Image: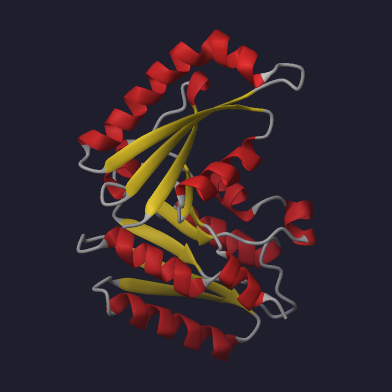
Length: 244
């Protein structure tokens, strides 16, 4: 089964909603309790000062996932760089995805964007494994400036999930000009759909000029929607395959 990393700002009281706990019940979960330190504060000093309180909160959060029937463990990190710590722990634990927690009382339908250079096969396999035999529907989303190719990709993705027993709908947004997947009409349509779904599953993108200008796609979707956002990490193999 997939392993999912759940990073939480443990000393700031960040928690998990019932919908996310239920969604991740079939997965192995690693709860990463982190606390971002001022540059001048050494992690060892923070661990002495806050370690007991952070550990107690982390144990409570981990027990929440165990009570839902899943397997869960935890890591605690005092860090100066949240994103690098998430990447490191995800790599160390072999996590296929990480979560931006959001809020959802229940999750009945996922939005799965396939726009751009995401590893669609990897994302779809993760989604199918996560849903299993549960009645959770999927809306596939694609923005493209090549309509025929876009329809074909959506049909193939729907067939892949149907083969695993997952019910799907599709949304295709056709750009009349050059496609800007991280800004403009395509991204507006994506965030509008995201707000109408219980949770979103996106593929991780490699850093790009667009992401530097507009910000990370998953973080922006999370900011525009209420529900959890699950980010399926790209593997070295898929990254190499996407290179020209």
